Length: 213
Image (cartoon, rainbow, N blue to C red; front, side):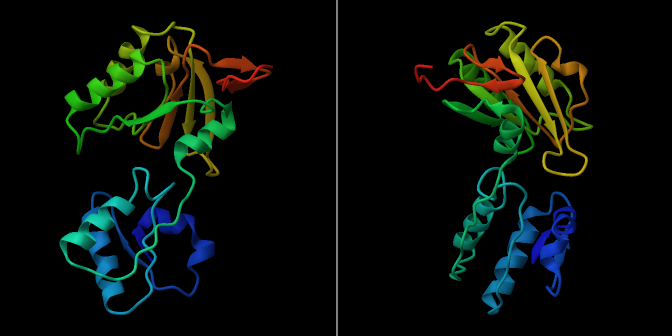
């Protein structure tokens, strides 16, 4: 089993008796190549990713590297639960209709591209899930994203904040566009910003799908 050291620790109930090969943050390419090489040698390898491996995870990189390195071993992508849907379940049903997911990390994508996507989503009145909202070095991106949505939506628009969703230290907060920046938001957080039709019903956030109720 190959993975980021933290993620392997989180699934200790599944790793007993397995050979574990771990790497640290920012070593994604090395991790994928290690998994592919071991698979080429005839071993059965699990490349562990958080959430859903095909959503901001390792699946795409592994497939790209397999193509580049001409690795022809069979590959199976296993679906998982990504942070946005995990948080949505805690909040109620805010993703019941069209929505978008945008990562605020500009390590791999220029901020100008991310900004255009934020502006388009805000203008389209889509519910949006924001991944990688803040880190110790990245602070201004979330502030700018908040300003973009405030220009298009009322300050009372609900915002759900989920940190370490599904873990023992999980924290779920329901705030709004005017106040959500007052809370502690980290790289382990995901945000869901509601749209103009999202409602708060008995403590649950619900974006109606259009049925007559």
